[in-house]
Image 1 (cartoon, one colour):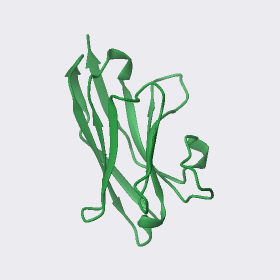
Image 2 (image 1 turned 30 degrees about the vertical axis):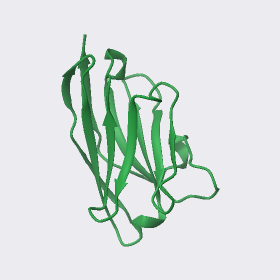
Image 3 (image 1 turned 180 degrees about the horizontal axis):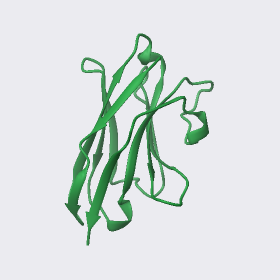
Image 4 (image 1 turned 180 degrees about the vertical axis):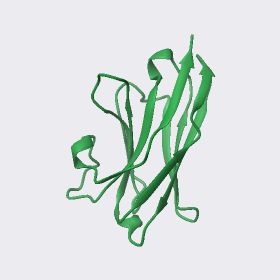
Length: 126
């Protein structure tokens, strides 16, 4: 079992920054790839970013490349999502997720992720 708890969401003006945190617990959490997804009402969850603990390799969704950075701190069992140059269209509930990998590549599909946090709201005002 892996438990995920997100924090750091809030209200920010366009052009601003936020850092989301995902505290990870569980005996074998280091085996999992960690991802961030976001969702707005009536839409499917959108892939934002992912990281593999063992190699620190990363992957990003096209809409956030160059603005968002995913990172992990093994000592703190925490995954971060640094979000810069925020836009109103970044407004969503952001979810942290864990995937027990089955391939060499990080997955951008929500269906592949086994565990999810409760989500944290990010609102970007124009």
